[in-house]
Image (cartoon, rainbow, N blue to C red; front, side):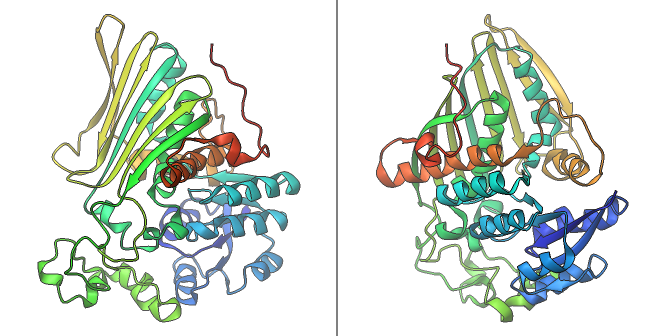
Length: 416
């Protein structure tokens, strides 16, 4: 059986992660029924690269004319809920990029629409599929460190990747929910999945220390900036043929600039964040994220009743490029056991190819560890970031149950 997919959003993510794999790897089981984007240039470009499926400037008309089985949502985050809900109401399933949406009101609306429509929402948490983090899940599930009581999770974005969020639409809280929603949804989902648990209460701190109007020498965008020669954050994206085609040649249609200044006054998201989370079973999470580190990577540790597990991965800098990733296990006497996983090929540590196989192969693959994520997992990951944003604004802890407003029952606490 060949399933049909329509696209809401002709983004770079749509092209690289979903559209090209459908036509190049999964043409026997999947086909593209239509492309929609408010920018006609990008929609035509995506169509040209994927066998010329029809392009639409009206999302509802696309659904009516093509009758897709599923809609893939890859728009700006603030609009995810709109296209997910309209897809569900039209009788389609929805696959959405993370985050599922950016605030609690939109989250509740998606959950309500899914219940009423009887259709299904899938959230693409590709980090779950990394062989390295899968092994960590298996170790926890096997009870090797006992009941997990404490998690420390530190994520560092370097000054290339981290800075890019402050050039793009993500730099406005109204578009992305900030990095605690847009980026950290990956990280919070991993902890939720590793622990097989759900968050109860959240407290957060957040500041903008590094980016934003922290220097006088700044312009509107890199390609027209008079300070380009002296700025360490200058990027020449216009000289990249792919970036030029997807963004610079599309500017006349929507005025979106891909190379805005990282020191702009309009930036209102945080670049320095820390969050504390209490889980239903009593575990506690201490999480931090910075967007200007000298290298990129992450560290996580889990301390339980029977030992401790430590993980780390480096994506840039002098520690990156290892051929194997290690998990360190300590028993209660401090004895060390090391488990190794060979570095996997493919995006997100080998997670992307495994996720795509489950999405588009048409195979009924077993999922004993629950790699595939639905709307509940999507909700629980973003609600930590949403609660953290509210806590930063108020200075008070925030309960997840208050954000759900009883529309999605909280799982019963398993704390002893």
